[in-house]
Image (spheres, rainbow over the protein chains, first blue to last red):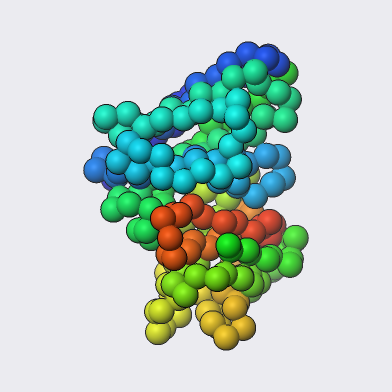
Length: 114
Length: 116
């Protein structure tokens, strides 16, 4: 069965650079969630989209923005990167809106900021 | 708002034995879901088991079972017949159904080490 695809899997950036992370949800899934997991931490919710509209916002810095496109894939744009942005970024998808149960996680993008 | 508490930062278990990972929760939503995820050292988040707040029976999935005690607000994960491959971080998470929010709130996790 198709799973959530995230690209790139690994990314190395310098401070103050920008980064774009991509997420391709499971086919026919209309809801996408982004989570950030710092080293040794639990995943923290950043932002979610349902039917291409932002549905909820968590602890996402103002330097970050995201959107969901017409084909339901989503991109997380990160600017003015800081050392503290080094983390594992997960995308998860579900169908039927935010109220549905299951969220399927992608393999994550490991971002390292030097 | 929801909150998950996992009080065991690390656990050891002998191979082939059963182990219980603790999880307590707090929520103001009358309807909610509880999840357990496994995160091996490779980093991926693997869904293990789900329990709905109105489910009458405790959830089971193979060697995983969820000991759901609603009055105590606990949702402990029981792994039977531990295997070396079970060594990983385990996260308990909650999702409320009271509003438009659909995101998961995670606990701090428990690192399980299975000894041969």
